[in-house]
Image (cartoon, rainbow, N blue to C red; front, top):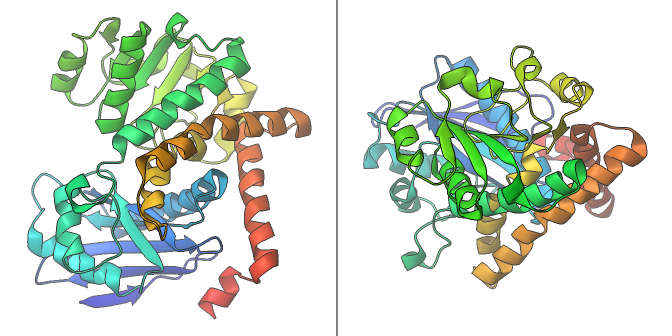
Length: 360
């Protein structure tokens, strides 16, 4: 396997792994290990260029640092992507090569499930590296993290609706949900069970038809989801969807979803704020999955009750962010970054760790 170093300012280690025998072309980005080893999911996506993949993995890994810091997981931030078609290019050979690639980092990066990756792929990785979380329950691991991500989103909704509407009665509101994957689908099922009205969209029309059978669920087609007159918009697909084109179309008072990197740029946090929309920073409200798998890394091993207790604290994390936002006249996104940076700086003061130390 050929491994190439990619220079990225502010990141501890970014490397590309190329294995011609298996067809693997992947990137691992370790953003910051001040608080512990970098834990973050592995994504498989058919990126058009290497540059597009690098941009994505850098944004995602940075987000993982802040996510772990705000969630008090005791871990750092990293991410990995495989460039390829998840419907065509998967093979045991490819994922075992990816496992060997992860192993070369010696535990500074620990991988987990993300878009395009399931437990089977992680099991193949595990044949070549021990630095894998989210394996099957039968193996003593924590299993699919998606239900825990969804659980954290629902818990976070309580903080959002109390802040914006003064109510914790989720059933009284109308939600528009973009993306019916494992997390978004679970969120919709929960809201439907509560008796809420939900408008959904997904690129897979079969999924839309499936979910339209649930009580209170209706379908919007494609980009029409941005125009739905609802109370809460929940992006649960891919990132970058909050931008110059979509934000002015929103007819909601809250944006609170499970997707990573929902803001196309950091400036869009201010744009949302100027539209009088409360934004729940994605790396806080969607932290349930990473909190769950982080419990595996403890010396005493995985315990679901411990994980659920930590996930329930997403509510408190968002309350802290909203209070900081009001007190210091910041957008919620700025407040969340401040909370995370404060925790990172406190840890640096204790252990003297810095990115420069790691890359020198």
